[in-house]
Image (cartoon, rainbow over all chains, first blue to last red; front, side):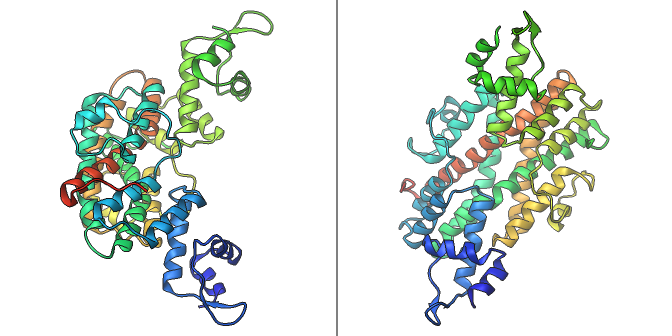
Length: 204
Length: 204
């Protein structure tokens, strides 16, 4: 398809697609003439990946490039894929602690330099500073819930397909399902509250 | 305390504190003279709430004002508090579907016009469009995990204290614990993956 068709199908302007081409985020199409290229399904899929990372994941162009590079040269082991995916999805602010007594309490098999560990320690630190005193009991309930989801995630996302496909799925899966998990948590709060306090939730 | 001390304790500049005062986000201090006011613990707590909503929750000043207004005039019922909190925490983009077959599948007690329902329907719609085909089985696992967390949240956050305190706790609790839940999910993925695929997660 021509770039105009790729634009129509993805809802991304031609000018933006040309920017992705210049930045190397999108591989060039098969040349049809000096100025026209032919684009296929892999281009369309790549554009959707880029948009999801930017719009939903809030990633910068630099981070998107990391995903694209890792996608072209995925690590050998399935477990290694996760480290790459989590590094790309790390929160911008990496200052602060890299571990936390609550995390140690979990007894999980996670290396000390794990990006996910530092991200979680940062979130716990921030919550405490801003006045949310999360009890160990509540934290362990969240950890049980996280383990339930992760057991499913690792089966679904890392289990099959090529390494490149698995990486795409881990990154996209986390980026796109984080809002689903957060939305489900809010909806579950309403459901539980309706059962406990009755009535319907007021809207301002 | 003087505004300079409030600034020192919260890490927010005096210029920004004066902006919050002008915008009505922060109530005025007790006048000490024509130009100086006395600020207390409630001011300090309010500033921390504002910063958490902006920095962690990504809320606009307009949304912060909604929280502050609701905080001053909280709804009567405990269940009503949740609706207000969720409306404030809604994602910016509200276009798109307000329900979804997967949500109906849950059988939860949630009104059709719930903000949380629309937010979840939007996240599901977006995920599908961007190529994440979430199976019903996986969705129901996430729902179980959400219910586990929500049962704890509603007990902890809505159960005690004044209505104003409960509202503050629901909003702050959700804003500050969302990154903890997401961080725990990533860490749990590493733990499960380590058990299944062995080795340690590669870092780029």
